[in-house]
Structure formats: structure tokens, C-alpha cells
Length: 127
Ligand code: FES
Figure 1 (cartoon, rainbow, N blue to C red):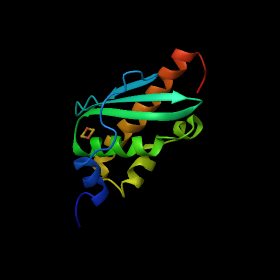
Figure 2: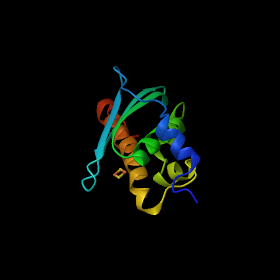
Figure 3: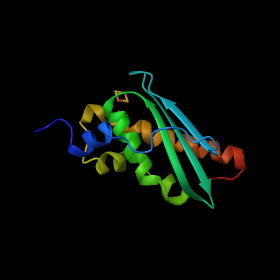
């Protein structure tokens, strides 16, 4: 059996939503101290909906695939749903990750949570 699913390979080789949003109003950045990978998420939130999202990831293929899938999962979604996104849901949407690569999907969850915290700070509203 292949180590990585077709979806992981597809999102690694053709990542969606790569880049930055100049006028983002929620930015989250996280890193994994062990592997040194870094992920940054830019969200443009309007009317409590994620209107746009982009990411920059300096890391392994699974981290890139996880960021790409996570952005697809939250784009156009209300903040209530975005808040609930787990790394497990990201990994499942990718048709799974090897156990020792699950921490890469955790980065995606944490980057989004960090962006939501940033949004709360900027707006003074609890998300
Ligand atoms: Fe660190 Fe993938 S090996 S995020």
C-alpha cells in the first residue's frame, strides 16, 4: 500500500490557496519545535464568514497537504464551524496520514486557532 493517499499527493504537488492576503484581518503562525516546520494562515473574515484564506508553509509534504486541505475546508465557512475544525478532520479529508505524520495536521488546526485568536484580539470579540 502506498504510504500517502492520492489526495495527500495531490494537495502536496498542487497546493490550493498558497500565498498571503495583504488585508487579512486574522493571521496565525505556529511551528513545531521538533521538526522545525512553520505554518502561517491568513484569513479575511467578513460577516463572521471566512471569505478568503491563504497559507505559507515551510515544512514537509504532509504539512503542505494539511494546510492546503484545511484552507479548502474553512473557505466560505462561518466562524462557528471553523472553530470546530480538528486535525483529525483534516487528516480524514486527506484520506488519512501515516501515524507518525499526524502532527503535521495538528499544525493546520493550530494555525487556524491561532488566526481566530488574533481575530478576537483585533476585534475585541470572543470567537
Ligand atoms: Fe513536521 Fe510534518 S514533519 S510538520
